[in-house]
Length: 533
Image (cartoon, rainbow, N blue to C red):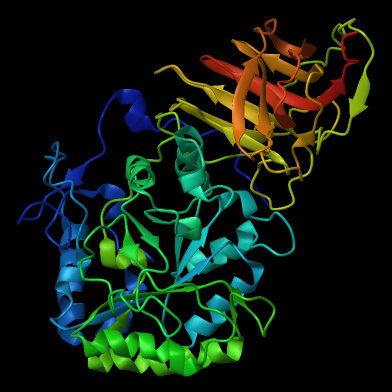
């Protein structure tokens, strides 16, 4: 994989203080649907728009013409940017352009499962597109999950990538801070990988009012929950379809997850029941695509037969559309769980520094038991996303600067480099992936741990440590003092944590850049110290 050689994390518009140009067209703003200003990046006919327009051209020429005219006018607009009002910032409501009595069908695939690669060829046969709800913590996590390459291929084919929390957590059981981390930081991670994310789906349909508010605060345009539409196996008092537009965009009512024992007729009945009541929105939730491999699965043959039956129904006013196509609205900036705006700048390989390595002065603390940190040299990057396997980049509050995987290494081939530009205070952290034990290290309550790493920095930087509780929550725990400045050659830094709390089960450690400047890091190590007498 060839990578660029220059860091581009600080856009010129931010450096000069200019705001990105927007344009207005008429009505209440510049959206093709008359609802708000259109960022310059959205003036072209994006892959998200074109598949549906091409499909509707064959099925409903008047509807296609209306949408295409709006998009072409948007692309031609060159009016200077002006600050939009709060009224103009309401999400576009594309669904209002559907003819009266239309039925919209959205086919969603959740949980980041490897078998969902079959969505690509199956849907391409019929010119249809799906919405995939993805947990970024599962991407490339093992052979059973979608790789980054799988997701990018699906997105390039026109399928929508939405969010399903970092780790597929049941949100109503988590503290608010952890809910924000699961929701906000998943969108940040997905957008950092290059996906335009506006839609969210609640794992396990855990959509309490406080959770819905957090999803809205994390800059999503919509969220859906399953089990809220009448279906062949239950929910007899539920409505036959969601309304168009939905009554609550952060509680779009979807059918319960499809099971392996559902028949083709069961699937068809869901569409027919919506058509029978004068139209509406039917959202069908799928998981595995396989022959009886799981309770929540559908065979490829059955899915193919359903798509073959569904696609021609556009002539009857039933359209297959993604969640974003029906809800609309701008792609808002990614918001970190701490409220900071994330940096989505591109990664690159970096330029080697000619400085000589420095052996440093090791800490003379007591000897301890060495623990097997995952990928401690940061060399392995199996999915080629420039982030070391089993490690995670975090950007709490940092908006300017960026990350890169650099060949400016002390001993191996690669190191990680963080940079913060001038601007609001923030941090950039590289930490062990905070999972349930595949990467995070099992630890003993009451023991202290000694961290070490090789680094270069011209700014404030230090170690950080978080722990996982017995209930599965991650707690932001403690930080070490600033390391000594060492900008031209590698130094060896160490720090000893306090004793772990009684409810700690796993540990995530790393290094943080805390102010404007750079931090270069590699070759981490961890020791468990003897418990106090």
